Length: 527
Image (cartoon, rainbow, N blue to C red):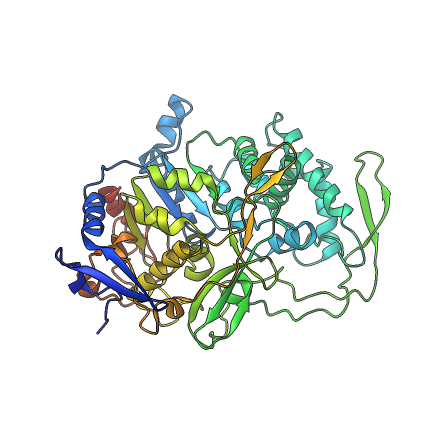
């Protein structure tokens, strides 16, 4: 039977908890904990939510959660389903450690944070028939590098069919930032940095990167993106880390001591082997087009060594199992040095005012936990009076093979407690003029302990898990085992969600996946 990490007997009001931590005794006043838990239960119900998620797992439910703005009486009639969302006060907190697909090429050539998940969520805020959305969600061909490059040239020259219905007032904005991206990518050409590979590149990623580089601000780029797609609502998309130019990565240590570097390598490693020489992609600059002022790539430099590429991967493809379970996820500087990234102040603002915190379904260790281990996140979640709801995965993946619901809960609690430990960052730095700035990455004086190393082999949590998770929602047909009694004993309420299709009658052949209407009827009671 599952033994809760936080002993339920310690919840007596007359007890004081004494824990051993690195041979030091730390006392925790149970009265203050109970007061915090009582405040959580009595928190005012505000229709607002902060959602921790990646780019794909929660995407089908964005329409369900947000109330779409109505611009006219016709919209009010035609878009009735969109107006039945749960709230227009939702903030999506997104990771920036993506290193797959065209994001991997952007990071390779121009550095900066991974923005693929952010772009995906931004596009999900507007209707699929939105013309700017169609342009920015378009992916270039994957089969041939020269074909992809030629189509890219059509796009930046505004000669592509996708431009036809894009509003004339936003065309110059989109094209300007695409051109800016192209110019910056060409400026990086060298023997050490081969040209950007446009195969499979998402136009929205290239636009967002061009805007980020131009403004020197990822938040400004996000604002510009929402403007050109015509989003008029109040939902916010916020990167978890306050970075606009610094590359970050993630790594995972396994229980057997193995260390894996990179999001793709952890969750869905590419089948491509490292290339010993170039793959025929154009490498040099020959001339500028007289009409577009765009440099044209025309030749090749043989023999360039290339590392293993994450440009092409398929999450649906089966991968070999991890040699053992994941023990800890941490941030790196894009190499192998552990760092403590700085929490985005916008995330702190939202967590202090929200009525609900949602841990979305999806990749546990490469989408959700990279948001939770950032220093400061754990303390803010623990102090919040919001409801804290875990949308439990109904299936397993490479990261969570064989997990139970209690394992998911423990992993989230461990991550948030590690976030509370990760306070050793580089001090603020001074720049000319006497202005003090906070560095984007703080280098650790020593690596953070793993959960088991911190608390001994028992991995006892120092805080009641209910400080971090108050509710677990799970699908009735979930493949992930859940022991409701064990979770109830540590103060977590378990709520089943009817199987996909129960409300609409459109039953899914896939088992363990949430239906939007079924999930909505439960969240309506909790938000």
